[in-house]
Length: 304
Image 1 (tube, rainbow, N blue to C red):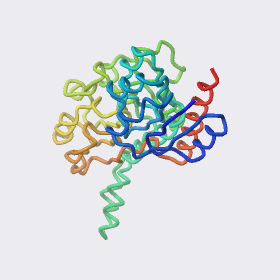
Image 2 (image 1 turned 60 degrees about the vertical axis):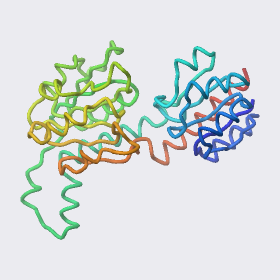
Image 3 (image 1 turned 120 degrees about the vertical axis):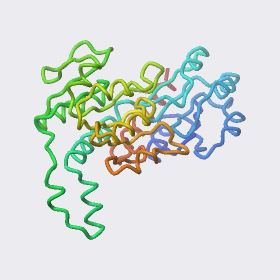
Image 4 (image 1 turned 135 degrees about the vertical axis):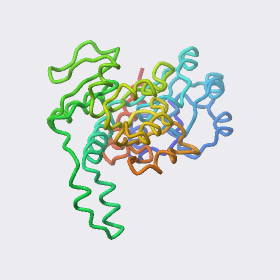
């Protein structure tokens, strides 16, 4: 099997695939125009988030040998999955590998929001000693966390939050059974009860702005919002208004609606908002797990 690596991928994973009998070409700076030209020569491709696997790319691929698209990561927003399936091209991702990294970032955000750690650090770096101002924070223990989405990442967040003494609510139409320490809730109930709301859903037409003006109005005054899932699931304009009004006490975001141009700058200008540049899965451990899973998928497929 001949495979093209379109985005930066660990050298170890590439070596694993080669040792497993896969012919690998690394073209991790390939442009969209170049990809259209070369893709017919390959049976499989590996992408991360940089490369967009459009219908045109898929059509070019199936005019040759393309049978498999591997997304090294969780989200497949950059792949026209429906078109791939209609053309008989299998799409695989690696949802388990980065899950713990994203869950840990979420928990880190809960604690950072509760204790205003970034704001206190910035104050210290500015030469200030605002002991009284930063001694009025709260604890997460005893508070209610509402999880919008209960997939692999949501489950790990629930486990860790429970260990911190939080009450956990979860809303997910695809889940029928939860552990005893997680309470099932519909979205309205979750929004009205949670002290912290954390999003863990993919961005689809059904989840677009799943947390918007209506949901924010239902929430407690002083609620905190965390989004380490996908941009577009949270209405950022509505969030900014809710923060300005005092309804939302703070927010922590790793993902944004527009990560090409605006990049959340409107929100990041607010002192109540903390954020990171979409690095939820960006750990050494996750990278190793993702690479290993990608290699195994490719090797197994080549041996069918």
